[in-house]
Length: 270
Ligand SMILES: Nc1ncnc2c1ncn2[C@@H]1O[C@H](COP(=O)(O)OP(=O)(O)OP(=O)(O)O)[C@@H](O)[C@H]1O
Image (cartoon, rainbow, N blue to C red):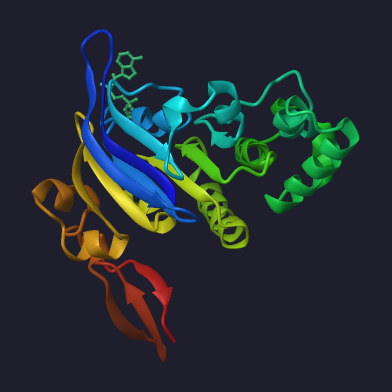
């Protein structure tokens, strides 16, 4: 059970080949990170799951069912989607943004709002912020709202397209940690698109590294890819040979410090 891409391809009407012969399974409750350079077909692949993009070859299945046979609007509402820049409705209050899909699905207003306020707490926001409009929140807070909104209809599947790409590195790390905590609690099936290999390794149980044309360079757990990069392209991309991944330990003032290849401290061991 889960999501299965079966030999899918996508050639856009202008002839651009975005994806070719892609096959992959995402088991239920696991996170797949699609990582690769710009234009490697990550977003195209992810959008095939909720039919925002229709493949020109192959099949996408959810729990064994061809998504092509499912009604598009119902399918889209049943899957949480976190777009790149939040995609919040600017003229609606935060709480109403979060409640959007449950309201469309017929949940009563009061129940939808109560649930929305609980979701704001789940993503680490003060429910009092629910009264504000999106423009009155920071970029990081807006992304938290976007995650809350994607979770509002309690979907089994969560699609995330560069969800934390527009925020600074410290907020980004916070949001990543929050997502890991939420995932530990809720156990969604997540497909995450990122161009940041560190993010892919941190969040993905399984990582697919793509090259141009949606061709798989390597699939594996972060540990497998780091330990045995398939070729020079992968090695360069993950930076396995880069100095900063070559860690060593040093004793400083009676404590054991871990430093990177440039001697910068990255943590304390004991
Ligand atoms: N609607 C479209 N019409 C034509 N070509 C498209 C369309 N959407 C995407 N493409 C092309 O398909 C290829 C893959 O695009 P896609 O957005 O899936 O890549 P990506 O890996 O997600 O890139 P990025 O990291 O820049 O978002 C690119 O060459 C892109 O220009």
